[in-house]
Length: 490
Image (cartoon, rainbow, N blue to C red; front, side, top):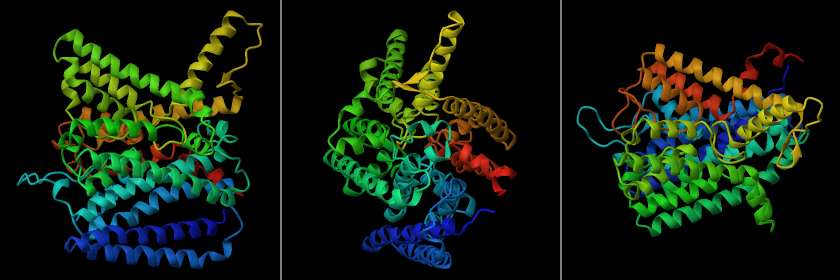
């Protein structure tokens, strides 16, 4: 049997940290005179006490390190258990959500999906996000910021060791941690936190300089750098000046690049960032998507491209990076533009970034595998070595990538069917599966509120979306393996 004590110990410590962080929105609501601070006080107490009990109970397991099996269990436990406690402020205070809705909002935050359950009141038409206590909105942003940081650490420390979806290819680049996950985790995490925080501060200062209030600048910096997409406004970025969209584009792109490259830049080695074929492909594909939509707008003479250039750039990048902000109704751009957006959403960003979805490197390996097979067909006797970025790609990496694509397509199809059977329309089921599995954010369909909130979805649909968000954030295999009986045997 797997020894769960180290896992419970780490989860306990993380819950203590999470409870301590609740003091920030607590203090904000207290300063602004909002009674919602009492909800954060109760949530912080429950979370901290529970975490402390867990950590103290299993403290005798410290210093033993983590096995690969324990790493699998820990990664899934973090993204399922922590949101349960992160949901407490949404239940105990405003907006007073049900357990299902509160957990949905917290999971959407920590997975950096950005689909919100909080929308305008259907009866009175009163705004939803705009009238939330500042502490609640800050907590939504903090959940996304923590989730974005957490997935970068997981992508650098755990996924290469667990050989999830071909991530073992990056083990030597992202520090070799096999057999010594915990000791190196602290060292890696400190460097990443410093870089992540530095980019977040720069983003907040840029937003503030362009006219956002101090609170909104901080909130949107938290959700922009994490590529999460939660906003303080029902209208999202449509409520802010045009220049703020360009700043958001810059930082969304920065957050989509490999954070290991930023570590190298901080050490004085800039060349790897510009040599990385992932980075070049990601930026090139973004430019192609923007150019295609602008060209169609010009070709059809429906909208002058120069009038919508900023919105096209902003909305393509926000979908490509899985951030999920909005500035216009993209369905009005026509079927071709909408198809382009759905396609880029299934690509995503680079490895060891805050972005989810399939990831650029897997497409590059898939394309290279196709080219290699075509060469072998033309020259059967030739010895053709598959390479990625100048390095040979082993069979186990290629097999893992093919397995990931297969599972992604199968999971996507099953999720669409399940959402349809849960009562959603075809469009909502399709885009719901798309947005949850790729952690993008927006959903389209007759059941979706005018601001994109999914509060009108049936409870079964919400739980299916929750499952999709967790599966997508943890790259499928690290969750699916837990349902195999062989995994739990000695």
